[in-house]
Length: 154
Length: 119
Image (cartoon, rainbow over all chains, first blue to last red; front, side, top):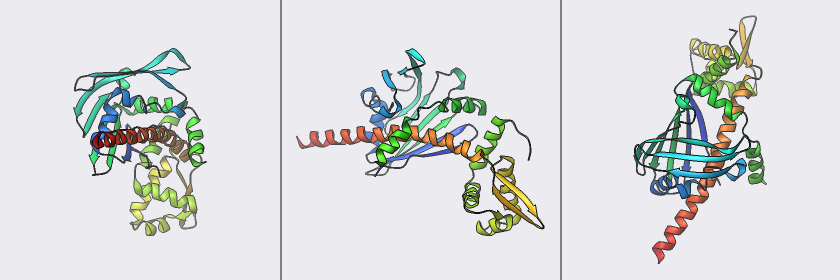
């Protein structure tokens, strides 16, 4: 049985994602901070996209850069930003700079509950307009997630 | 209803949905139309409090009301809710797909640690 992913819009420019994982916070944190692990899950197979490269310098002030294969951009589409806070096993804060000043600030908090870890990912956009613009990008999301659901049910 | 631009209306809808009582009201109206008095009783609220919530939902286009005699009946507004939930749903699906793969990575990590500990 899979753990439920909850998504809640908190305000006109904030969204919060909650999920529990069946492992200690140390393991979950590692999966978010090591490139060789991150690249195995950040771009789900079902998305139809492929991760071309993944560079992460996970320390306060360090930067990251992911490049995806994308039909609209043969040279790849880059997502990048900086880590503002790296507190092992409990908190990770990073910027999303590919959209200039309109990018969201992502705050990941991990709560160790013994055998499980509850994560809260809080995404705050600089303004309601920026949120609206980012939201638009999901309108073109591949339908393959629905296919994945069917696959999981079947 | 106040006329808002499409974007402003979507924003109003999101703001309206940020409240648990209002989400409950929508769920309730999804099952059956109800008067404001019914809703106030069901959610254990004053009539004034419920009127405010319904007002917010109505401005966002999520609920439509009609006065018949002395009773104001509420029902779901047209289309708007689908648009909002459809977006949230796509977003949730993306994260859900990611996290399901992360589960797999985590299981592998746990397995490796176990093997290492046994050696």
